[in-house]
Length: 359
Figure: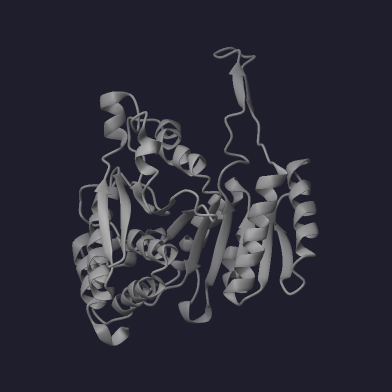
């Protein structure tokens, strides 16, 4: 029987709660489809930082290296600065394993009501492809004159041709493979003098290699407005690290809740393991209450299955999510307008996976 080793890092806050439900789903679907999943748990978190001064051990990357994939919950909690928690765990994993593609679907799921418009009028189903290893998320820069009226902070965004070209080509290939060859570039070349005109140039040059893919480009400010006003017009959107991050939070917000949004941090060459996580954060304001929406984590697990080559199982998980959300009296968590607990929604999805008629 084929089997896969999965590193599990629940992280902080609601990460531990939604991870429980995702693992229940993975256990059930792997049993249904006849493959094995071996989970190895790593309790790295802000609590680890408080105890040890590190978000993960010095050999943390090496301990993750031999796994087939990584399933992450959420990182961050009050008392530990965000730049410490993120740069101590999530970003090193992305960069050490060259997970240069952040792939984030935005879809209006059954039963969700968009907050800004009639759900029946919005066919929202697109993907954000985010460059994931450089750009605005850089450690180049510094401070001087701290605490004085001459204090100065310099933050340098760095873009290389190698990284820019490979994410653009990935986006073109993904758009073509999706069967909806329509790609939008997020830019800001009217205000950011060097880097965004460079992205525009590389986008134009590479687009010549893909004559079958329709292209457009939008400045990030008006693109955000169009996400709200015309989300159905998009198929695939590609952007830099910062722009992709912003857009992939805004997109799910337009559909009704960020609680359902998944993401994949992918090393396309499969030299290193890829990592899958929900877009939402650790939500310390509701942590421990048992009301967090587990769908973002479960959908991330479905993307993990797709990446492992278990596409039929991944599709079955998605059908189960859609079946539950679209059913009358569904056990919805508060962010979806209901009163159900995390475990109730998770159980409903697990039970729907066991209904073989959907297969």
